[in-house]
Image (cartoon, rainbow, N blue to C red; front, side, top):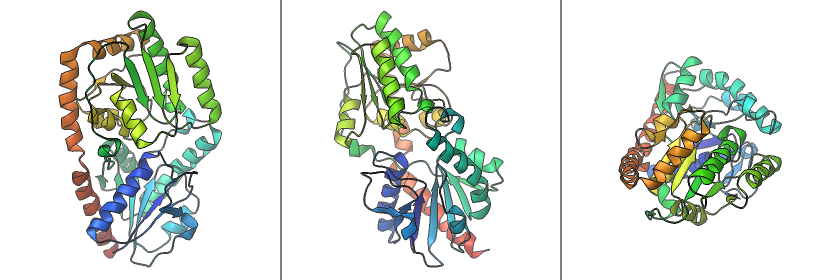
Length: 351
């Protein structure tokens, strides 16, 4: 059997791209062939993902469609007779992006329009979270599968539990984008630094949705917390692992998440997580994070202080994080993946 993966876009630091590469490794273990293609490929991406225009398939090859944004030529793919499996990673609501990143907003708007067509055309509809699967059902999917992101946290290196002491470091990892609300992270951090930890530092890691947006974040940081905020992009996996090992607390104030891989990465490194319960975040974290749905920045700043200073709380969150991480083990996800592909083949045969 051959399984061809088709991505809306591919990038070096993109979670969906990394998952597709992990999937390909599993497919080889299963004895399955196929190739991986993307509608858009960012510079510096893994060379094993080819442009979508190069896709060639036999009629019985399986098409695994990773959907996270609008993809050109999707209609032609959906008209093919092949067995088709949709894996929906969620699409960022475009209203978060129109003002700052209109091109990205347009792709998201198209992606939402294409979703209904996808749901009706595929043999099996799956999503990376129950949160996203509910959206598929609202569009008419009769049966949905949940295939969490296959995340290999070991690629970042081993954990090293950091003992609080000295100047604390707050960390957030995620694309520099309005819906990730790094600006709000900076504002909360400035309060925490001013009133609780004058020597604290904030590290933001992520590739920017636009250069102008990243520049705006730097200006805000220079205004509210001069010389205390580091914004980094294009880190290697070893460098990213070092950032987690140096962190005392992970602060995620995203307004929309279809899964949120960095939460699992923080669990791997034993870093306490504070997050807003938006999108799939509560589903991903379970009881392993402090979830705060409060618009008062002072409240969030106080939680930061608690997560840094209270060692019994830190230990409890580490234990819960380890358990949560085990529930997303790559082997367990691979079992779900294989079952979904086999169900897709069987469903296509019944057409």
